[in-house]
Length: 274
Image (tube, rainbow, N blue to C red; front, top):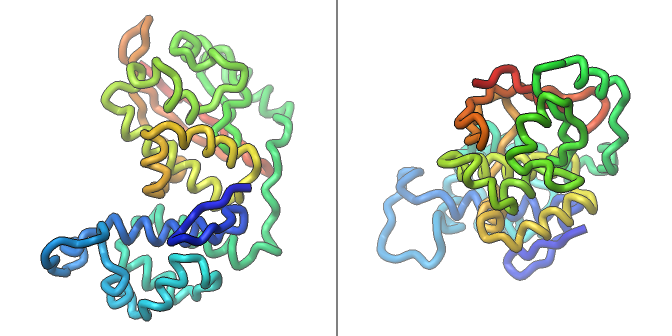
């Protein structure tokens, strides 16, 4: 269990209050007045929009917005959230994240509690092996890599990814000395995506001790801490990643990501690479 401080209030992350409050405040502070058709006069004491500006755009009172951002109002209506999403110019991923935070907060009694990763189902291990020369791995809820096949190992081991017994995408990206060389100019955008993944995972599944420990560990790294505070959001999608491999040189990897039924595991398949 972690707490997060918002406007001097210590809020427990596990109940979703701190996450919802901090997300709204972070998005407000990242929008410039000119982005929403407002004129900025002189120096501003706070970055982004002032509370009164966002409140006006969303059609709510400044006092109510303050309560939301401080976690003192924990049951905003769908109408209020929709108005804030439009006023903040949220992306589709960010709207989905806001909805997930609200649903988890308001329906906590009906939603399943987050639980530690289940054992990998034998059928998933068989699937990994049967993919043969197609590299693939199985990801856990906090971006742990919990199983993989030989084809995937043959590519990532020279990158240092399997140097530790419990490989994790975030730990590798922010802590391993080879990560910046491996990802090159894509390091920063991949870092944004990984932190966004973790934010989205916590909104969907809640926060357990392992997830909180991972955040606490990585917060000591400025590149992670800055991103975490900014509350980026990203959902897992297919895409292409370029890796600078020490043996073969640059390779472009086309990745598909599939949700494993009845678990928090994700199958990542490298459909092609060259």
